[in-house]
Image (cartoon, rainbow, N blue to C red; front, side, top):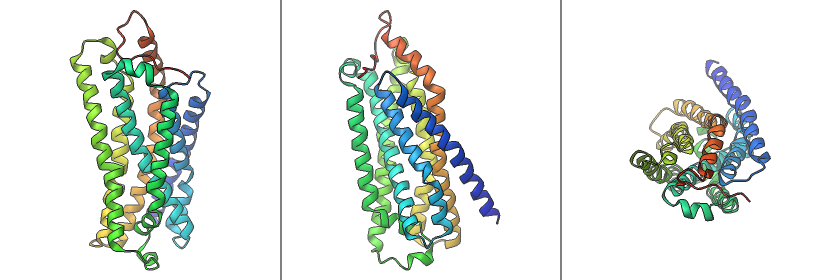
Length: 287
Protein backbone atom coordinates (compact mmCIF):
# COMPACT_ATOMS: atom_id res chain seq x y z
CA UNK A 1 0.00 0.00 0.00
CA UNK A 2 2.81 2.41 0.86
CA UNK A 3 4.51 1.60 -2.44
CA UNK A 4 1.29 2.33 -4.34
CA UNK A 5 0.73 5.66 -2.56
CA UNK A 6 4.31 6.83 -3.13
CA UNK A 7 4.13 5.76 -6.76
CA UNK A 8 0.84 7.58 -7.30
CA UNK A 9 2.20 10.76 -5.71
CA UNK A 10 5.35 10.71 -7.83
CA UNK A 11 3.40 10.05 -11.02
CA UNK A 12 0.92 12.79 -10.17
CA UNK A 13 3.66 15.34 -9.48
CA UNK A 14 5.52 14.44 -12.68
CA UNK A 15 2.39 14.61 -14.82
CA UNK A 16 0.87 17.76 -13.32
CA UNK A 17 4.19 19.61 -13.43
CA UNK A 18 5.53 18.26 -16.72
CA UNK A 19 2.54 18.84 -18.98
CA UNK A 20 2.00 22.58 -18.30
CA UNK A 21 5.73 23.39 -18.12
CA UNK A 22 6.61 21.68 -21.39
CA UNK A 23 3.44 23.00 -22.99
CA UNK A 24 4.43 26.54 -22.00
CA UNK A 25 7.96 26.12 -23.42
CA UNK A 26 6.48 24.70 -26.62
CA UNK A 27 4.11 27.69 -26.85
CA UNK A 28 6.92 30.21 -26.31
CA UNK A 29 9.20 28.56 -28.88
CA UNK A 30 6.37 28.33 -31.41
CA UNK A 31 5.35 31.98 -30.99
CA UNK A 32 8.83 33.44 -31.30
CA UNK A 33 8.76 35.87 -34.23
CA UNK A 34 12.47 35.43 -34.90
CA UNK A 35 13.38 31.83 -35.58
CA UNK A 36 16.88 30.91 -34.38
CA UNK A 37 18.79 27.67 -34.08
CA UNK A 38 18.41 27.76 -30.29
CA UNK A 39 14.64 28.19 -30.64
CA UNK A 40 14.47 25.06 -32.82
CA UNK A 41 16.49 23.09 -30.25
CA UNK A 42 14.18 24.20 -27.44
CA UNK A 43 11.04 23.55 -29.48
CA UNK A 44 12.09 20.00 -30.39
CA UNK A 45 13.03 19.18 -26.81
CA UNK A 46 9.72 20.53 -25.52
CA UNK A 47 7.80 18.40 -28.04
CA UNK A 48 9.70 15.24 -27.04
CA UNK A 49 9.24 15.91 -23.32
CA UNK A 50 5.56 16.71 -23.76
CA UNK A 51 4.89 13.47 -25.66
CA UNK A 52 6.81 11.51 -23.06
CA UNK A 53 4.86 13.03 -20.14
CA UNK A 54 1.50 12.53 -21.88
CA UNK A 55 2.18 8.79 -22.05
CA UNK A 56 2.81 8.61 -18.29
CA UNK A 57 -0.75 7.34 -17.54
CA UNK A 58 -0.15 4.54 -20.04
CA UNK A 59 3.03 3.59 -18.18
CA UNK A 60 1.05 3.57 -14.95
CA UNK A 61 -1.57 1.31 -16.55
CA UNK A 62 1.05 -1.07 -17.95
CA UNK A 63 2.63 -1.50 -14.51
CA UNK A 64 -0.54 -2.26 -12.57
CA UNK A 65 -2.39 -4.08 -15.37
CA UNK A 66 0.46 -6.10 -16.91
CA UNK A 67 -1.89 -8.19 -19.06
CA UNK A 68 -2.37 -5.24 -21.43
CA UNK A 69 0.30 -6.20 -23.96
CA UNK A 70 -0.31 -3.18 -26.19
CA UNK A 71 0.07 -0.76 -23.28
CA UNK A 72 3.32 -2.46 -22.25
CA UNK A 73 4.82 -2.27 -25.70
CA UNK A 74 3.73 1.30 -26.45
CA UNK A 75 4.90 2.70 -23.11
CA UNK A 76 8.24 0.86 -23.35
CA UNK A 77 8.78 2.04 -26.92
CA UNK A 78 7.95 5.67 -26.03
CA UNK A 79 10.33 5.52 -23.07
CA UNK A 80 13.09 4.12 -25.25
CA UNK A 81 12.45 6.73 -27.95
CA UNK A 82 12.62 9.57 -25.45
CA UNK A 83 15.85 8.24 -23.98
CA UNK A 84 17.58 8.02 -27.37
CA UNK A 85 16.29 11.38 -28.58
CA UNK A 86 17.27 13.15 -25.35
CA UNK A 87 20.79 11.72 -25.55
CA UNK A 88 21.16 12.64 -29.24
CA UNK A 89 19.77 16.13 -28.65
CA UNK A 90 22.09 16.87 -25.73
CA UNK A 91 25.00 15.63 -27.83
CA UNK A 92 23.98 17.96 -30.66
CA UNK A 93 23.53 20.90 -28.29
CA UNK A 94 26.97 20.36 -26.85
CA UNK A 95 28.58 20.22 -30.30
CA UNK A 96 26.51 23.22 -31.40
CA UNK A 97 27.79 25.44 -28.57
CA UNK A 98 31.31 24.18 -29.14
CA UNK A 99 31.09 25.30 -32.78
CA UNK A 100 29.84 28.71 -31.63
CA UNK A 101 33.04 29.14 -29.64
CA UNK A 102 35.55 27.42 -31.92
CA UNK A 103 34.21 28.47 -35.37
CA UNK A 104 32.19 31.68 -34.95
CA UNK A 105 32.50 32.69 -38.60
CA UNK A 106 31.22 29.35 -39.84
CA UNK A 107 28.42 29.43 -37.28
CA UNK A 108 27.37 32.92 -38.38
CA UNK A 109 27.04 31.83 -42.00
CA UNK A 110 25.81 28.24 -41.71
CA UNK A 111 24.12 27.80 -38.33
CA UNK A 112 20.60 28.32 -39.64
CA UNK A 113 17.24 27.23 -38.22
CA UNK A 114 16.67 25.13 -41.35
CA UNK A 115 19.86 23.15 -40.81
CA UNK A 116 18.96 22.67 -37.15
CA UNK A 117 15.47 21.49 -38.09
CA UNK A 118 16.91 18.93 -40.52
CA UNK A 119 19.19 17.63 -37.78
CA UNK A 120 16.22 17.33 -35.40
CA UNK A 121 14.24 15.34 -37.99
CA UNK A 122 17.24 13.05 -38.43
CA UNK A 123 17.49 12.49 -34.68
CA UNK A 124 13.76 11.74 -34.48
CA UNK A 125 14.12 9.16 -37.26
CA UNK A 126 17.21 7.60 -35.69
CA UNK A 127 15.57 7.41 -32.25
CA UNK A 128 12.42 5.87 -33.74
CA UNK A 129 14.53 3.29 -35.55
CA UNK A 130 16.30 2.17 -32.39
CA UNK A 131 13.05 2.11 -30.39
CA UNK A 132 10.72 0.39 -32.85
CA UNK A 133 13.31 -2.22 -33.74
CA UNK A 134 13.50 -3.46 -30.15
CA UNK A 135 10.02 -2.55 -28.87
CA UNK A 136 9.21 -6.14 -27.92
CA UNK A 137 12.54 -6.49 -26.15
CA UNK A 138 11.95 -3.43 -23.97
CA UNK A 139 8.54 -4.87 -23.13
CA UNK A 140 10.19 -8.13 -22.13
CA UNK A 141 12.79 -6.47 -19.89
CA UNK A 142 10.26 -4.35 -17.99
CA UNK A 143 7.49 -6.95 -17.65
CA UNK A 144 6.89 -9.05 -14.52
CA UNK A 145 8.24 -12.59 -14.51
CA UNK A 146 4.76 -14.07 -14.95
CA UNK A 147 4.23 -12.10 -18.14
CA UNK A 148 7.67 -12.95 -19.52
CA UNK A 149 6.68 -16.58 -19.75
CA UNK A 150 4.53 -15.64 -22.75
CA UNK A 151 7.53 -14.29 -24.65
CA UNK A 152 9.56 -16.50 -26.95
CA UNK A 153 12.68 -14.37 -27.23
CA UNK A 154 16.32 -15.28 -27.50
CA UNK A 155 18.05 -14.38 -24.23
CA UNK A 156 21.15 -13.34 -26.15
CA UNK A 157 19.14 -10.84 -28.21
CA UNK A 158 17.61 -9.37 -25.07
CA UNK A 159 21.04 -8.88 -23.48
CA UNK A 160 22.39 -7.39 -26.70
CA UNK A 161 19.46 -4.98 -26.88
CA UNK A 162 20.01 -3.83 -23.30
CA UNK A 163 23.72 -3.35 -24.03
CA UNK A 164 22.93 -1.33 -27.18
CA UNK A 165 20.48 0.77 -25.23
CA UNK A 166 23.13 1.54 -22.62
CA UNK A 167 25.93 2.23 -25.08
CA UNK A 168 24.02 4.20 -27.74
CA UNK A 169 21.53 5.91 -25.42
CA UNK A 170 23.81 6.66 -22.48
CA UNK A 171 27.55 5.94 -22.40
CA UNK A 172 28.67 7.01 -25.90
CA UNK A 173 26.53 10.21 -25.87
CA UNK A 174 27.94 11.02 -22.41
CA UNK A 175 31.49 10.91 -23.76
CA UNK A 176 30.58 12.90 -26.88
CA UNK A 177 28.76 15.48 -24.75
CA UNK A 178 31.51 15.97 -22.18
CA UNK A 179 34.34 16.47 -24.71
CA UNK A 180 32.97 19.67 -26.36
CA UNK A 181 31.57 20.87 -23.03
CA UNK A 182 35.00 20.66 -21.41
CA UNK A 183 36.41 22.51 -24.43
CA UNK A 184 33.92 25.34 -23.94
CA UNK A 185 34.71 25.56 -20.22
CA UNK A 186 38.46 25.58 -20.96
CA UNK A 187 37.99 28.27 -23.60
CA UNK A 188 35.97 30.35 -21.15
CA UNK A 189 38.79 30.19 -18.62
CA UNK A 190 41.72 30.78 -20.98
CA UNK A 191 40.36 33.44 -23.33
CA UNK A 192 39.95 37.00 -22.22
CA UNK A 193 37.04 37.83 -24.46
CA UNK A 194 34.03 38.94 -22.44
CA UNK A 195 31.51 37.06 -24.60
CA UNK A 196 33.22 33.70 -24.18
CA UNK A 197 33.62 34.23 -20.46
CA UNK A 198 29.92 34.91 -20.11
CA UNK A 199 28.29 32.43 -22.47
CA UNK A 200 24.96 31.94 -20.72
CA UNK A 201 23.94 29.05 -23.05
CA UNK A 202 26.68 27.00 -21.38
CA UNK A 203 24.75 27.25 -18.11
CA UNK A 204 21.83 25.42 -19.70
CA UNK A 205 24.11 22.59 -20.79
CA UNK A 206 25.62 22.35 -17.31
CA UNK A 207 22.11 21.96 -15.93
CA UNK A 208 20.65 19.64 -18.58
CA UNK A 209 23.55 17.19 -18.73
CA UNK A 210 23.61 16.05 -15.07
CA UNK A 211 19.80 16.17 -14.92
CA UNK A 212 19.46 13.78 -17.84
CA UNK A 213 22.14 11.31 -16.85
CA UNK A 214 21.27 11.20 -13.14
CA UNK A 215 17.60 10.62 -13.95
CA UNK A 216 18.34 7.90 -16.51
CA UNK A 217 21.21 6.10 -14.79
CA UNK A 218 18.93 4.00 -12.49
CA UNK A 219 16.91 2.99 -15.56
CA UNK A 220 19.98 1.42 -17.14
CA UNK A 221 21.18 -0.11 -13.89
CA UNK A 222 17.90 -1.94 -13.40
CA UNK A 223 17.84 -2.96 -17.06
CA UNK A 224 21.02 -4.94 -16.48
CA UNK A 225 19.76 -6.25 -13.14
CA UNK A 226 16.52 -7.44 -14.74
CA UNK A 227 18.36 -9.65 -17.25
CA UNK A 228 20.84 -10.93 -14.68
CA UNK A 229 18.19 -12.89 -12.73
CA UNK A 230 20.40 -12.94 -9.62
CA UNK A 231 18.22 -10.74 -7.42
CA UNK A 232 14.70 -11.22 -5.98
CA UNK A 233 12.18 -10.44 -8.73
CA UNK A 234 9.91 -8.47 -6.39
CA UNK A 235 12.78 -6.16 -5.44
CA UNK A 236 13.77 -5.71 -9.07
CA UNK A 237 10.21 -4.91 -10.12
CA UNK A 238 9.92 -2.28 -7.39
CA UNK A 239 13.26 -0.73 -8.26
CA UNK A 240 12.50 -0.76 -11.98
CA UNK A 241 9.16 0.93 -11.37
CA UNK A 242 10.72 3.82 -9.46
CA UNK A 243 13.57 4.03 -11.98
CA UNK A 244 10.99 4.49 -14.74
CA UNK A 245 9.18 7.17 -12.74
CA UNK A 246 12.48 9.00 -12.18
CA UNK A 247 12.99 9.35 -15.93
CA UNK A 248 9.83 11.47 -16.12
CA UNK A 249 11.28 14.01 -13.70
CA UNK A 250 14.00 14.88 -16.20
CA UNK A 251 11.20 16.09 -18.47
CA UNK A 252 9.88 18.25 -15.62
CA UNK A 253 13.26 19.84 -14.88
CA UNK A 254 14.23 20.59 -18.50
CA UNK A 255 11.64 23.37 -19.09
CA UNK A 256 12.68 25.02 -15.81
CA UNK A 257 16.18 25.52 -17.22
CA UNK A 258 14.74 26.86 -20.48
CA UNK A 259 12.37 29.30 -18.76
CA UNK A 260 14.90 30.63 -16.24
CA UNK A 261 17.57 31.07 -18.91
CA UNK A 262 15.38 32.65 -21.59
CA UNK A 263 16.17 36.21 -20.45
CA UNK A 264 19.89 35.47 -20.29
CA UNK A 265 19.75 34.02 -23.79
CA UNK A 266 18.23 37.25 -25.04
CA UNK A 267 20.97 39.33 -23.35
CA UNK A 268 23.59 37.00 -24.82
CA UNK A 269 22.20 37.43 -28.33
CA UNK A 270 22.11 41.21 -27.94
CA UNK A 271 25.78 41.26 -26.93
CA UNK A 272 26.95 39.16 -29.85
CA UNK A 273 25.00 41.46 -32.19
CA UNK A 274 26.62 44.55 -30.68
CA UNK A 275 29.17 45.80 -33.22
CA UNK A 276 31.25 47.33 -30.43
CA UNK A 277 31.78 43.92 -28.83
CA UNK A 278 34.29 41.40 -30.06
CA UNK A 279 32.21 38.78 -31.86
CA UNK A 280 33.27 35.30 -30.89
CA UNK A 281 29.94 33.59 -31.06
CA UNK A 282 28.17 35.33 -33.87
CA UNK A 283 24.48 36.10 -34.10
CA UNK A 284 22.05 33.35 -34.69
CA UNK A 285 20.65 33.78 -38.19
CA UNK A 286 16.91 33.97 -38.56
CA UNK A 287 14.89 32.37 -41.31
